[in-house]
Amino acid sequence: MVFKDRVALVTGGSRGIGKSIAQQLVQGGAQVFIFARDLAKAQETASQLGNVTPMQADVADFDQVEAQIKQIIAQTGKLDYLINNAGITRDNLLMRMDKADWDAVINTNLGGAFNCTKAVTRQMSKQRFGRIVNITSIIGAMGNAGQANYSAAKAGLMGLTKSAARELASRNITVNAVAPGFIETDMTAVLPENIKSAMLQQIPLGRFGQPEDVAQLTCFLLSDTAGYITGQVFHVNGGLLM
Image 1 (tube, rainbow, N blue to C red):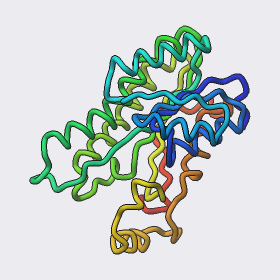
Image 2 (cartoon, rainbow, N blue to C red):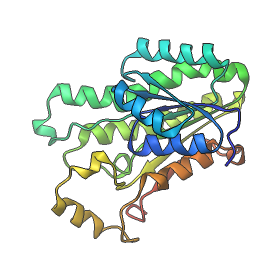
Image 3 (cartoon, one colour):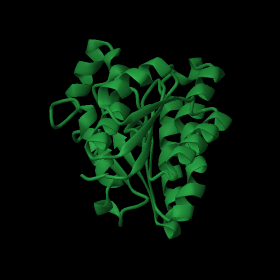
């Protein structure tokens, strides 16, 4: 896919799915900016990928997000793609979950997507072009014990996707969501082996997904080929949810 002369922002772009999306965008010719809370990690990723500018930003911080996105637009004159990928987990059973853990996940995984989307829509509307892809999760569609906060945030992200798609379509801005299943990343690597084994047995394709599986679909939705697709949620889970 060709992304020559396009400017993209990938949140949570220093590792895992976000890094893979950034890599494919760079390979397609895009100028890519990545947000990460850990600037050193973002700088390391940028040095590996090439045409990537690392920026330190906590997506849950509305003012910080707005300032950084204004900086991108001032530097490039536009912003074509936004990939809301940043996310965290604070797992616990609902009856034991601290309010702080609930707030942290909602504010980052859902609030962060709102903050970034709101910050880019004026520029995208002005240029009458934009592509927004929200990385949600299979957990937002099916739920999971011990992840009420994560599930609620990711389900909310699906609703945000559809509402934003309706609001922005007249400006030639598409908004879609990609819902990964069990993808091998740093976030899933810490799970106990018995949990991984039990999950694997439920996946019809018989393997865990790779970040590239999600990145390829995401980049298709960003491409000119996908210009008539908006308000949709695409599942990438090996058949775990049908």
